[in-house]
Amino acid sequence: MFLLTALKISYILDPNLPKIPTPAPEDSDQLKTGCKKQDGDELLCRGHIFNKISDYLYSLFTSKRFSKEIWKSLEYKYNTEKEDEDTYLIMKYFEFSMIDNSSITDQVHELQVLISKLKKWKFLKHYN
Image (cartoon, rainbow, N blue to C red; front, side, top):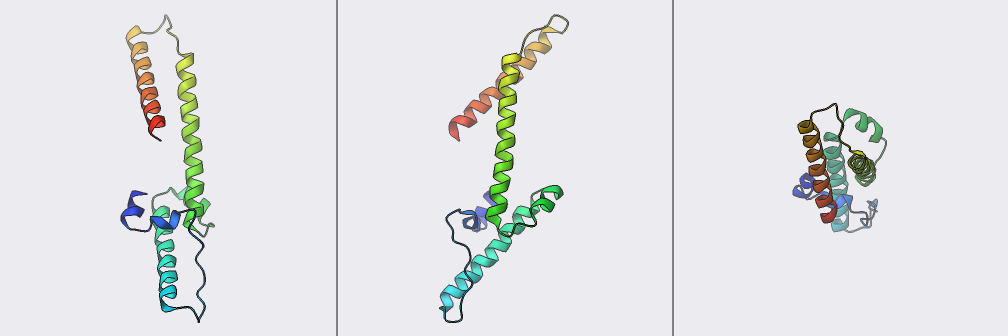
């Protein structure tokens, strides 16, 4: 998103942006120029998104014509993965228990890492 914003093409991902109309011959030159710019920005935005994803995802999303569709699908995919990670982290914390046949230092370290991740998660949830 940072790159797309820096390139001033992130507006293409706005869900309220209407689809690019096909200009009619009787339309003004300003409207035709605006449509041409938006069409070019759409292509550029789509290209930058494809440039940053894996080959597998590229193959999966090449059938989608608009950047908004690709972006929405990617957000859904990664938000779902993040929620699954968060659930796993909380479950792992509640199930944590000390065992006799392992070093106390290692177990305490494992618990500290888990708590650190939970604090980070809580912080991020608070600000998102």
